[in-house]
Each structure stands twice: as structure tokens, then as C-alpha cells.
Image (cartoon, rainbow, N blue to C red):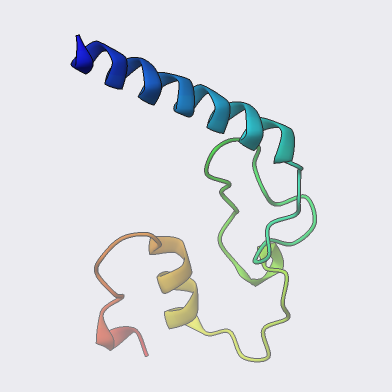
Amino acid sequence: MSLIKLALAGATGYAVYRMYRGSQHMEEPAAAFADGEATPGFAPVRNAGPEAMASDMKHWDKVDEESDESFPASDPPPMGMR
């Protein structure tokens, strides 16, 4: 019986948490995205390239582009790209 009470208490706590988070959720622009680049949803995604970034890139070469296009892959671009 105590396991059922524990499960009920956990479910109630989770429901309260979800209601609280739902009331606190406000649409904020993503910090790294240029205006209009963030997709709606749980994990926003932006297009590759310096024009999709919020900050201006002073230097953007082929290695930067390959790295940005491959994100979130675990392997960096090959060293021969420089």
C-alpha cells in the first residue's frame, strides 16, 4: 500500500511541476540564432552559416563552415580543409 501512496505522491508532484513550468514558459528568442532562424518546438534548430547566427563573424572560412554544418556530430572536420 505504501508503494501506491509513493507513486501517487510522485505523480501529483510531477503534475504540479508541469503546471508550474507551463505557466512560466514564455517564448524567448534563442541566443545564438538570428531573427527568424529558430524553429518552434522542444529543441530549436537553425540553418548553418554565419547569416543564421545572432553574432557577426569577422572571419568565416571553409573549416568554420564545415564545422557548423556538421554540428552536432562528434567528429571535427578533417585537418586538410584548412
